Image (tube, rainbow, N blue to C red; front, top):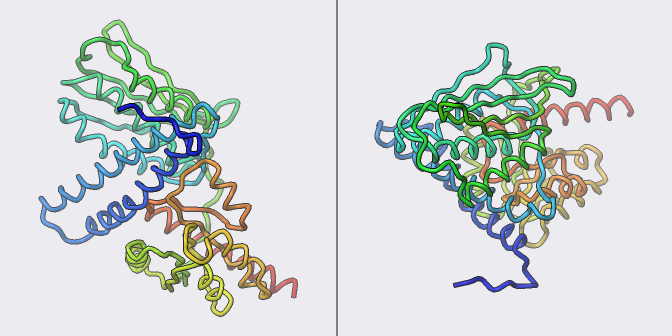
Length: 365
């Protein structure tokens, strides 16, 4: 049945709403699966959990691709840069792709240049999405062989460029023509690469071996953030009981103390009356939403309380969200499903920021 256009809810808005609705329960599925994966499991149980995680991540990529497709015509795609380990990110991506490759009789290998380093600065989620799309395209078109993924970083006139090359040594299936769906996904992937200062290319040699390459501009960190070896005291403002439990389990695992509130009003009051190293603030809460609560915190009379780092926590991945949360006075935002490694890094950087603010206030006193 054809879908009737609704002038009050354009396609992009409907896709954004669908993305949010899907990401919220996926937060619980992925978060609990990651926690379960870290427990003592039988081998078959561990395989089941990892299959749940792979399928959930694959669903997220599909959701993001459909949302990006809806946004292509209005230039709404965006990026959010961060420091992360490139080797770990690509290893995780290969493991997610391995089951679909194995179903086609394909092996996957991953090679790194010896001097690739440990961390880069770019959009981790967008890079992962682009690599997944390019690899999935080659997997769909080949069988019975091997796909080799190689990564290196080269210096150039405009800075450092990360190159991820996927070369096929396998049988090409049927026609080399692209389907409509594959063409749409490749166009999204090209747009993502261009947003990050790079490009995507697909070439075929005389032996009918296909090679895909993704290149993006990256930065390498000049210095590492100092590690503060003490538990953080964190305020978690989240109205969902399931998310409260998930975040609490993660923070316990990371060794941090926390306090829970279920709305923005209570969050402001908690910051006013107690000390916290940072606030994890859900954006959609009853009585007072996260953005308004942050603005109220910034207006508090006590300077230390007013300057507490506030990190938005949301399933809303629209490209305008980083600018919106910054305008509301927040310091950064974490997207759902929650990345445990990124949360840990954010806690450490927030503690460093809190310490620096205290020292600055003490010197000016």
